[in-house]
Image (cartoon, rainbow, N blue to C red):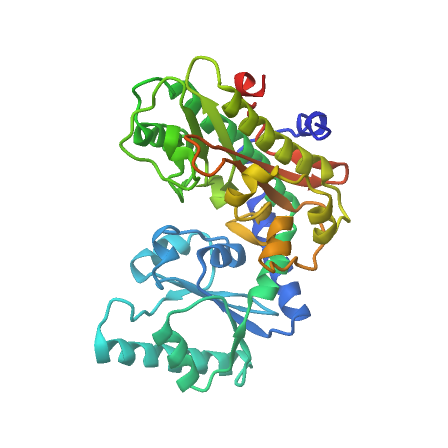
Length: 407
């Protein structure tokens, strides 16, 4: 695989080497540049990843994925304002200058919710006037129905902010690259601990606990899925850890799906054999998935369009296509990110749209393949997380593939 020698040259930094002031300033500068390009004078962000990208403050990120308790207002020029969960303001104030108490209506019911939402919208409109944006438009990433309707009722013009946030976060700053490399090493440690724990009689949820423990002991922040499966649970893919015993000869699949140090995503998949020798069918599925991922890694170079990538990427054999993975590749940073690159079959059969985008240096792609025949008692999931460099793709996690399954 052409990318392997270069991947080995990536030096894993110590966390103390990273300039966190430059990290915060660089991300905000990219975001505000994107806001100006997309003619968005000001944005309201609720997505934890966008809030963290704009302010550098990550707090209760798992809970706030589904709770509207933290948000920030980011103008295209000037300093953002962070609205923090009131009981946690002292935490945010250690890292950010303008922190104000957040308001919410989420856990109120009926008319009370509307009362709180209307107060919030009125105060927001007053603040927008103070900042010089009385008429908007206000870019927004996500909000619940009551909040959105309260903004409309207050006369605030709301537009989608995703074009700007995607453009800003797509190419990583130099400090973000350092964090992605550091988290790649954490991913290697997670997979090493996971493989070492595989034995007949261990349960899937015990292996999940090993994976989580290896992450948390290295200052990672948590798993966002529970994708550990063994034996027949590996086909089709997406079964999460259950109370199933791993048996001799089982394939054991894992997707790390983790928020690592400083919140950056560790997204790598491996499939292992629990003892013995693989069957010819297991080996065929494994080699197919490996060749698919390796072929995609070898394709990577700055300047390649997504359309060219789809056209040149290895195609799965017919027997594996019905259960192919959702996408060939997606981006990663403070979250699983898009736009994604679809499989050619999805373009041909399901009218999937290929984004009009181009691979660029310092983007991070997660290249995925699942090989499992319909009705088979096993399947193979493999995925590599790759940094795009001037010389091609460099694997961020370098954990080896299963030698027995590769043959």
